[in-house]
Image 1 (cartoon, rainbow, N blue to C red):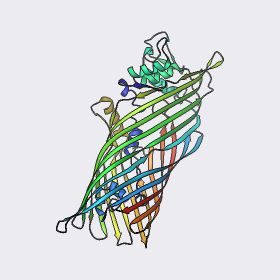
Image 2: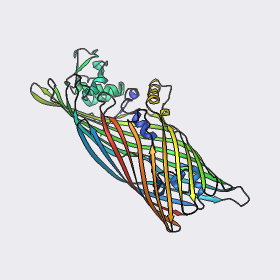
Image 3: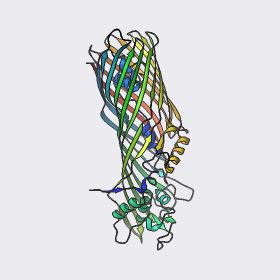
Length: 512
């Protein structure tokens, strides 16, 4: 059984790798197109339409469009393909999953004829808001002519060790490496643990090994070229449970409120193999594994309205509040090296078998405002357009009075920006059949536009109306490129990833 290590002091020092990772803050701030097949077939352009359970998740006034109580359930097959480039290496990976990603019901209560409030609705729905399942591999020969070892994982451990006392990053006499890793984490935190791994694996050499107060180090890995094989695996999802109330005023105005309970379940594992044959290197092989588990809960609300300007033309507006998350994280690590010791290869393994449990932290994602237009051609079809804007630079770690959080928030405000999303969808009905299509474009949340690039996606779907029951199926695809550093400290070289998400979604909806 793995031992548990509570890092009470280490919350700040470990943050550069795990808890306060900006890429993770972005991940938990973004929503993917999920939901019913009809909603996905129009690429989510449903803000002025309503009459669909996922449309209710987008604009809470949408439930008041229903004339009868309604329910729907959705399953989907999600396929993710990653094409990765890393120096001279090109790799391809694929991941496919089957999920139940939506379910919910709205109950309609008509008022008496004399009231201008024509009906009230209440509803409850579950929906996945983002799927994190993905895997990719980066392999290639990492070359560097600068005469240093910044292109080696040794630089990761060196950056953490530099300036730290030797007696704070080394095992005591007769103390096991596992116990030392646990104790150092509990007393000093994550950064000291990383320095400990570098020293005890012989990657780092103290300038004065007999002096506990030593704070300077050199590397037993010589500069040159390094063969890297890096694998990344993530699983999990974001989801929410929505409690909805809405009403219709007279014939043309619909108003609604959503109260959302959010949750995060995310797992990530990375594994690096590094080999070198550089002249003077004592350590020639390194294997480094990191595992992260993230769970969280949060709350948000939505206010929305839909106005029928005429029988054909509708407008909608929705305000999404920030989501206020409370997040918890756990990590495990493994490190092995092979070194040349007097002409013989010696393997050093550090497998602490320790789960690092970090203090809770708060994350506030940015608010979003959406405007929607729709034109309905009687019972023959419709065209719908949504525009939304979210300022990712307003993402915040809390409490903001904390000096480290304040520094991270300053970084976020400089590297992230506001981003717009455009969604366009259409539907044509012929007898019992409905034919649908859509397109969406999402701007990058990064100022540089490349750390996470723009997203382009399209969708096609068909539905059949049995009368009281409807069956819908949709295929949608999106593409997005990103530049991902292997690590945020030391070895920060970029893997270029072109990701394609393809989904087949099947929904059953019916009147109650």
